[in-house]
Length: 631
Image 1 (cartoon, rainbow, N blue to C red):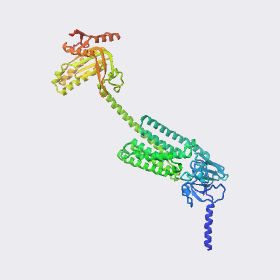
Image 2 (spheres, rainbow, N blue to C red):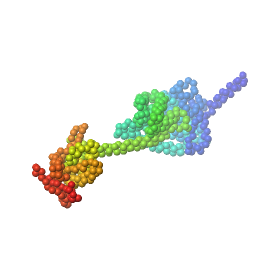
Image 3 (tube, rainbow, N blue to C red):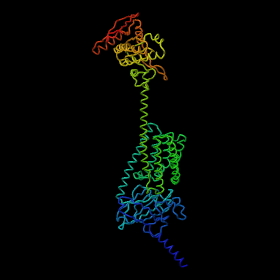
């Protein structure tokens, strides 16, 4: 019995000594705290349901590992803690610090959801309104540093009074990391500057994407803006809550609602964004249906009371992982079929976003995977780089398509100009053919030229259709450039005939007629080599009023020329057969050419003989005075 009594006594004394011993964290090397943080990841004293002041000899209820939510603490009959509700005290003595030195730690969400921090008996930070009657807790969080000083022995005792009612978890949420105040403040403000720059960049992307959506009405820009916005809110309300630093009076429940958006909304709009980039990824599945839970959660985020909403967070987290997994599966399947930049970049970005989201969620749940670091900001920065490269690639592809389209349109325009010359558009004061409408017209005095192959019907009857086309095309290829060279416009082709107008100069029409006949001398030699008939043409030139316009309807428009002077020109050309002359011109065109020459202080070089028709209208025959050889 004595032995049994002795054993029981030792067990009781040992148990009492364990709980009576104050939880202590001894810093191994206080020099390290000059430039680096040290995590207080050790056992802390925990007192349930009461705020135990510094110096009290009350034995703690538990020795608990921090960070760790008190929902899982092994205390009998603590049903409230299992739901996150409750109040309590956390205490830890820190030793081996540099004596009489100031230290700091980051306070935001150190505890949920309201807390006070004491260094020994001195209050150093307060967040919200705590109460041992946890139902009276008033939630609030601040993004700042709490500062305390070590005593002459290099010791200090930190005490956290924590109470929570609305949040689903309670206790100290994150590892407390301390560092000497001077260096910690410098690092804190450096981080603020860095995150401000990152935030400014993200806001620029958001605004720019919204502007592009407003201008181009492409949903890709809208989905990208919403996705970047949701990630922005997650980073700056949870990962590094710069918003709370600059706007400390924002209610905590609003911060939480903004924080949750990335969990459910980002995966949804990312699905729609990926689908808008590449329609083949979700071609067999309705992308909007896959994204629909995001919009349901958004409504719940707005409508539900916080005490209910934050208990949906695990479901949101599950939905987030499911959505990322579904996207990943479809993108991998598509990558196996389509090997292109969009697919590969999308696959890579969803992997890094998934990794960043996973570390962020584990971090908020108190799971220390990477020495207490979560990679959501870094993963999103890498995502931004990838999207920049992808958008640059898409822009380059679009530029190539635009260049290709411009080249195509240029060829199309060239083809159109074969039917409607540029000069005709200029004559009607139009920039391009798209501006033409039926009923457009313009009248002016100008020279008119008519040319026709003599005896074409008789000649064509002796040739095959192929030979006829070969002959006509060879003829037109030689003659048309001469007309254009002399600033003439081919008004229309009439089978083997040509009607051309010369708006700028009557003399140009005369010179053109001579050059055309000169060209025919060379063309006849070529026709002999090709065993084609040695054709001759007759040319008539006149000067008078011409009205050019468009006729038809909305579906079919054609160029129309109306003028009795065109009829006179055709009549002059027909007279070349009667008088056996290659060129016959009228008196009005000679008078107009003479006036042009006088305005330029020169004489008109013209050789020809006068002939009269049956109606006594004068016609003139001219010949090539350059070679002196009749045509």
